[in-house]
Image (cartoon, rainbow, N blue to C red):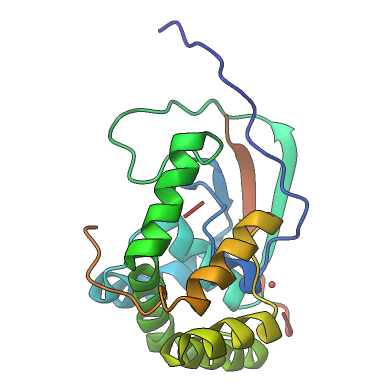
Amino acid sequence: MDLRPIRAAPLYARPPGFRNALVQSCTPGNTMLIDPAGAALLRQGRDHAVAAGVVAHDWWSYLLIAGAGGLVIRDPAQTVLYRQHGGNTVGRNDTLPAMLARLARLGSGDFGEWLRRNIRALTGVKSLLTPENATLLERFARSLDASGPSAAAELARMGVYRQTRLGSAALLAAAAAGRLAGRAATGAGSRRMAIAGHIRQGASDA
């Protein structure tokens, strides 16, 4: 097949971690390398993820392993060719139509519903999280039930973030407008991600 190069995937400046994973999937599944300890964690969480109806397996993997204190390493080298196609649930995030689609999901409440599904799945395996991240999960869940301005203020205090300033600002604006309350959802070249399940006490593109 003759592939036409489009552009390199963005190399995000902010570190991966649980505070990022709570609000963003930025670890494409086709680029992940997961060690045996990480795979064991995912097996323990599988039934909870299925029962909660999590939207993306790669987002769930990032959430659980980062939440459990696993080491998430982003390789800056371009090593994987990614073929964009019409059936992508999320797909590229670096074009104007893709950005508008993401804003639409924020405004419709779909994104808020995705967050709640992730929370339900993580709550079922809260014993696997570090104490700090288990507490952070509880605060995050409460913040989504707060009134708009209060929700935005609590998210800011928690320090959750997306990988760009615009993305973080859009998240807080959606929270302030009450758009993270959630509703029934109808359903994200990549850089290689190495995700190690080795547990460290302490901390961490829908």
